[in-house]
Length: 136
Image (tube, rainbow, N blue to C red; front, side, top):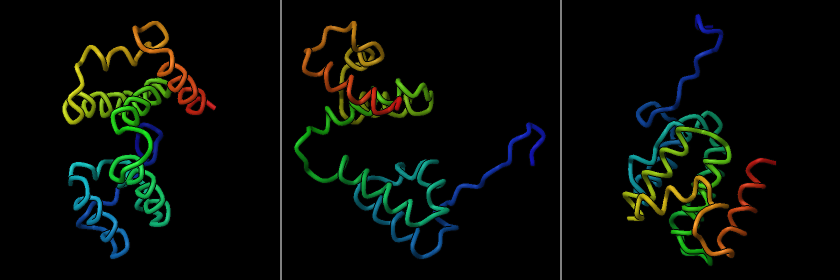
């Protein structure tokens, strides 16, 4: 137990992973980028089945082609990060939208208060559903 009253929890790093987790990490690096091996993957790696499930979800959303554009998928993720009030998640998704998706910073900022932003009503409806699912 640490002095702050919280237990420390070690994340599973690539060089410390067992063979099952290493295979998943290798696939992430091959299909995405080693920078994707962030804290959430290191946390889920303690339960390889959970890590695999989370990666499969991410792969469907981020890697494989689907019916929803990657830009919209990533904008939805930003709305969910804002709704959950997670600074790390907001920072990750904001940076991702600006640098990887090459969205204008002003367009990304609109997602913080999409209800009052100059956005199509159809997008606002999608964002409302995403926010509701995040909060419930």
